[in-house]
Amino acid sequence: MNVLEVHDLRKTFGGFHAVDGVSFNVEKGSIHAVIGPNGAGKTTLFNLVSGHLRPTTGKVSFDGADITGKTPDVLARMGMTRAFQITTIFPKLSVLDSVECSVNARKRQAASLWPWRRQAARDEALKLLEAVGLAEFRDEIANTLSHGDQRTLEVALALATEPRLLLLDEPTAGMSPFETRHMVALVQDLARSRGVTVLFCEHDIGTVFSISDRVTVMHRGQVIADGAPEVVRKDQHVIDVYIGKQDYGSKVQGGGLKK
Ligand SMILES: Nc1ncnc2c1ncn2[C@@H]1O[C@H](COP(=O)(O)OP(=O)(O)O)[C@@H](O)[C@H]1O
Ligand SMILES: [Mg+2]
Image 1 (cartoon, rainbow, N blue to C red):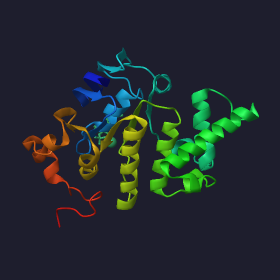
Image 2: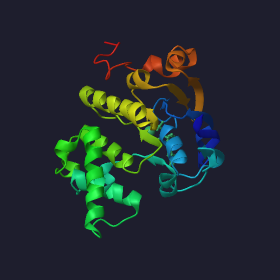
Image 3: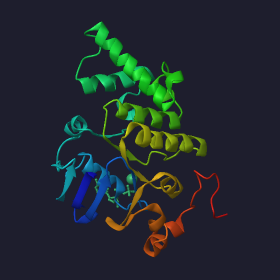
C-alpha cells in the first residue's frame, strides 16, 4: 500500500525546470531514499511534497487524499512532517523544552496553562529524547549541541508531531562517520520499531544503499531510476551520471573505494 503518491510533479523557476515531471510512490512502512547529484532537484521535490512550495503542475496524494498545495501545518496534522533545522526554530531553548514545545504544538495547547498537562507533555518529550539517545543533554541549550546531536534533535522534534510519514532532507549532511552511523540506526529504528514511513534525500550513497528499501534517483529534475537498491546501484545510467562520480561508501563503511 502506498502512503505517498507523486504524479507528474513539476516546478519551474522562471523558465528553469527544477522538478520536471517526477512520479514515484512511497510504500507504507518503508525507508525510501531520493538520491542524485547536487542540483538534481531533491530539495525542491521535498519542498513540493511537504507543502513548502506550490507545484507548477502535478499532484501529490497522501494516504489516498489529494494534498497538492496544502500547507505544512495542515500536512503535519494529517500525519506528514518534515524535520527542520533546529537553529531556525528553537535555538535558545533547552533540548527538553524544545521537544516539549513541539509536543504542545501537536496538542495545540499553551505550555503552562495546566500543570498536569504540562507534566504529560514533559514526560512525552523526555521519552522521545530517550528514544533518540539525547536524554543526557536534556538541559543543554539546543544550539550548543554538536552538529550531529542537533540533527538528531530535529528528528525528535518532528517525531513529537507523531508523523506516519517523516521527511528528512540530507539527514547525515556534514556528519562524522560516527554521527552518521547513529542517524542511520535511528532512521532504521523509526521505521522498524515505530512503523514510521521515512522518505529521505541524501547525497551520500553509502548511507542510502545500507538502509533503503527503495531508491529513486533524480538527475536534472527528472527520475532516471526507481527500484530496489541492489537494482538501482547496477543501473548503467545511474552509474554514469552519479555513482561513478561518488566516493561510494565513504561514511557508513568508514572508508571510500576511491583512494
Ligand atoms: N527558489 C529557487 N529559485 C530558482 N532556482 C532554484 C530555486 N530553488 C532551487 N533552484 C534551482 O533548482 C535546481 C535544483 O535545486 P535543489 O532542489 O536544491 O537540488 P538538490 O537538493 O538536488 O541539490 C538547482 O539548479 C537550483 O539552483
Ligand atoms: Mg538539496
